[in-house]
Image 1 (cartoon, helix red, strand yellow):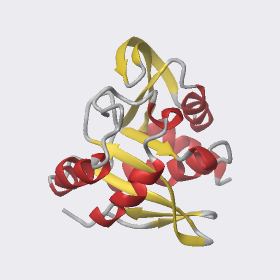
Image 2 (spheres, one colour):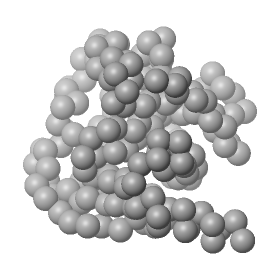
Image 3 (cartoon, one colour):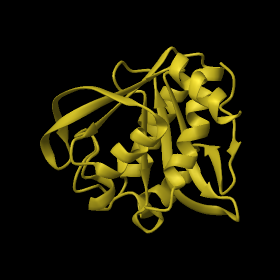
Length: 186
């Protein structure tokens, strides 16, 4: 398997996840406004060693097995400043996830990160479709999908940190993504 690349956007650097990122994740991640709409596999209250355990025992082994791809999102002007994370999963119905620390939300950073991660999914990994699921109440995540040109293909029951809720499944095909990319370049 090829190593996971680093990406740079206008304002961000996306660097592959490493075990040394766990302390920063532990500081930024366990906030209700970050975790409430994440899948119920996220323990809540978040344990003091939650990030270390997740990175060491789940994320990095899944990366090594070629089932997942994880990046830490950093500010380009200060690459030591981690603001969140974005991930790709080789999992039907759930191909991308992300989180952003509260003080960095609402500034367009996640849309910027998604743009390069979607390109990696469709161009490098050559996947035919990207599906993302989200709690119906997660309006910020929904807006990211809408801006990308994804379409909602259905709803189903989901289990989240905040409890059972309906979840929406959003989808974009490689063909639609390439068409949108070509039209934005003309």
